[in-house]
Amino acid sequence: MSPRRRDPGNRAVLIDVAADLIAEAGPAALTTRRIAAEAGTSTMAVYTYFGGMSGLVREIVHEGFARLQRLFDLVEPSDDPVADMALLGRAYRHNAVTNSHVFKVMFGGASLAGFALSEEDRQHGRYTLSSVQECARRCMAAGRFQPDDPMLITHGMWLGVHGTVTLEIDGYLILPYDADLCFETQLVSVMVGAGDDREAAVASVAASGERFRSAFGRTVARLPSGQPGRGAELSKARGAVADFGAAKSGVSDSTWEEADGFAARCLRRSDRRRRGA
Image (cartoon, rainbow, N blue to C red; front, top):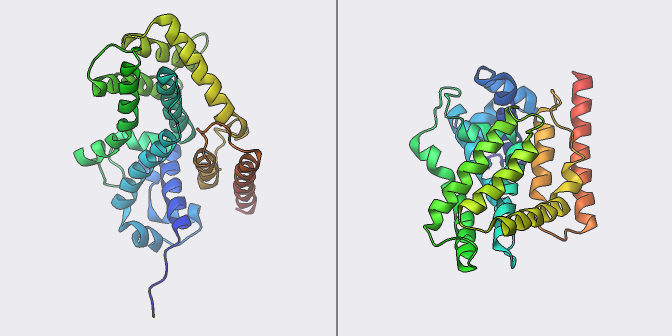
């Protein structure tokens, strides 16, 4: 008898469920029994797909960076490289906020199910920096940034955006200095710090905001956030929206309708599961 074929959809749901449990109930919630119950599968699925809990936690980290890279790949170069750089920053924020449970595991470093991020695990996602590094080179070639080490500029962008987003996710940025104000200010500061003219930086950051809203805003705004009990289905809905070419301008209406429909179906399934519990 041939071995049972693995369902990649189940694998993705297991990753989302595990990450969501960590965010909502802490590391103690990460048990095979609870993951299986939330995902609607057997406890053996964790061992079938990941070899155990440690493998599952590692895959949460890898999947988080893969999602980020998919968004970065969709930021197409324009004649304004500084706006492109700001759009990469917005993609980073979008990925973090809409997948906050995965984001925290990616950078947490705490022991989870007996698994602690190794040095190799911590450095796994550095490949995502190459998109930002290339954009930094374009900014220098255009005369917008001062000549410098493009990877150092990349780290400056990473430090500024990551720090702001982490404070946002943890609820520290409140009015009058809320997350939006702080993030927009930080983007301009990073560009100016790299050598751009302040007025030009403000214009490019604003342009990136228009590009982002035209691509991301339609569907993401319709997804509810912070609703306990939505678990894997809400996470899957958010991830699906992010993967529907979210950062690409000019996405067709039919594509957005398909993304909207998928998200709505996921949320309806979650509602039915809660009512039947």
